[in-house]
Length: 343
Ligand code: FA5
Image (cartoon, rainbow, N blue to C red; front, side):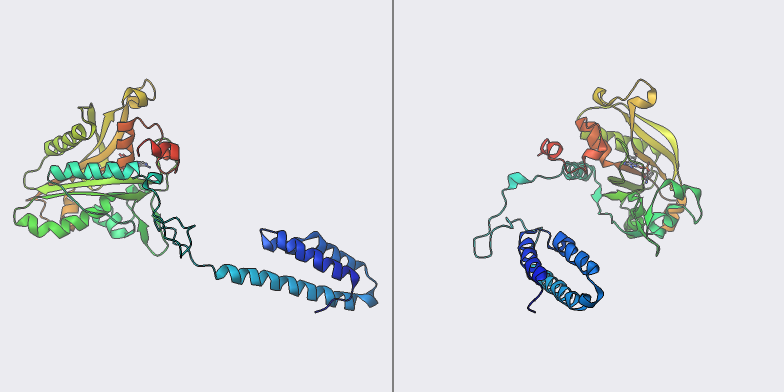
C-alpha cells in the first residue's frame, strides 16, 4: 500500500531502519515510533480517524509481514547436529574438522565407574546396566515394600501420574537379575552381579546430597552365604579401590529388602573431616544387608536353600573420599576448573 499521510510515510521509513538494526526483531512491535502513531490516532477528531486508522493498520500489517519473512528464513536454516564431533561453524563445502580432543575429557564419575566395574570384574562379578525409567513393582513391590508401606516415603521418588518411576536406587534391578539368573543358580552357578547407573531423588541438596547421582548395586546369591562374606567382599573392594586399608565400620540399619540390614561407613581422610564429633569423622558410603527371603521368593528363588547379600553404594561419595572433594555439587556443575583436574 502506498501511504498518503505525511506522519505515516515518515514513520514507515523510520520503522524500516529500526527493524533492520534490531537483533530481537519482535521488539519492533514495541517501537516508540509506532506507539506515537497510535497516540496521534486517539487525539484526532472523529471524522479524521477512519482514513488515518486505515493507513496505520496497513502499516502494522506490513510490519507483521517483515516479521514473518524473518521467521521463514530462520526456519530454512539447516539444522545443526550439536552432538557432531565437528566444528559446526565450518560450511558444508569445507572439509569438516574434527574438534581437538583436548577440548573434552571423560567425566571423573565415568572414569571411576569403569574402574569400579573393573575391580568387581576381577572379583568375579558381572556388570549389568540399570535403567532410568521403571515401575512401581521394581521400585517397591518386588523389594518387599507392600502398598502403603511407610518406608516408601524414605525414597523421595519422582513419578508420573500414570505410574512411571525415575528409580531412586539401583535396587530396582534386584528382581530382574535374580529372576533371570535363577536357572543358572539352580545349576550350581552363584549369582554375582554389579549394577551401576544414575538414580534420582527429590532431595534437599547439600555437600553430600544431590538430586541426581550414581549408585552401584551388588547382588550375590549362593548356598551358605553369610554376613561374613558380605563384609569380606566390601573390604576387599575398598582396599583395592583406595589402594590402602581404610577404617570401616558397619552399624545396624533398616531396609525392607534386606534382613539384617547395615550401613557401611569409612573414616574420612583428614581433609574431609567436618568437626570433632564421632559422626563428623565418618562418611556413610553404602547400605547393605542379607537379601530378605521375600525378595528371593518374588524372583522364584527358594530362601530355605539359597541366601545372599546386596549393597547399594553412592559413586560420588566414593570419588569424593578418594580425591578429597568437599562438595558433591561440583560433579554436575559443568565447571571446567573442576573437570580439568581429572582430564
Ligand atoms: C539405598 O539406596 C539402598 N537401595 C541400598 C541397599 C541396596 C541396601 C541393597 C541394601 C541392599 P540409601 O538410601 O542409604 O540406600 O543410599 C545408598 C547410598 O547412596 C548412600 O549410602 C550414599 O552413598 C548414596 N546416596 C544416597 N542418597 C544420596 C544423595 N542424595 N546424594 C548422593 N549420594 C546419595
